Image (cartoon, rainbow, N blue to C red; front, top):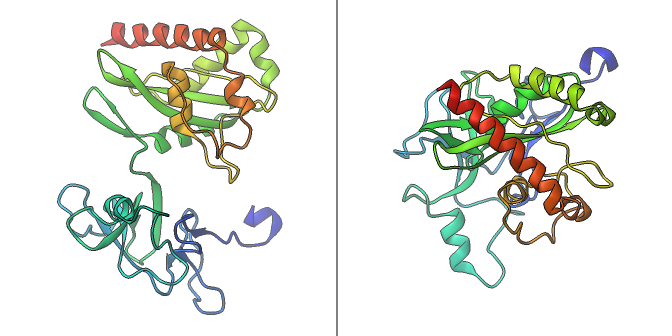
Length: 272
């Protein structure tokens, strides 16, 4: 984009809870060049740290850790949860036995101080004892030419604990009208991620929007996708942009997905 349009990509990192960027490169105040994939460095008022998820100790250079912010938070950030102060403290301020705000995001910091966000700490799938980040799988699948969107979730499996399922929205959905062509697409996408412990199912969410469940701000509702796949109640859908996306997944359609999941589970077991 930068080469084609001749303009820089101005990135930043923030949360709904923060109200404004936690990390960025402040124009006219910071002359450091942008680095692809990095939102930049902590903004004024934020004391950002990366802590080891087990020990709570600070992480070193290029070492993955949970992104936390030392209190107090700057103006504009979340102060409490309406009517439930105890929940606010328990959710955001009770990790590592330290007075730090937990973002629940993974990150790393390079030698020059640039931060890179790796995804949510709860977007981790445990497959036969192997912890895999869903973002890594999604980025691999996204490189396939006919993939418009992808969401990877972990679903329960009696043998492995969890298996990974990829919900793929193709750019050309008419490709999936032909069963053989759809199978070729599935195999091609599967080839992008060859870890033996990972099982991927190509899936097109039916419905008018032909997209996966998202909030109005564009955040993918992976828990909703996971619930649909496991046949559970998706729960509160008040934040979803288009409820028809979920409603369109009828029991019959879900049965097709379950059938596919059973088939690929068997495929993985035979390869063990």
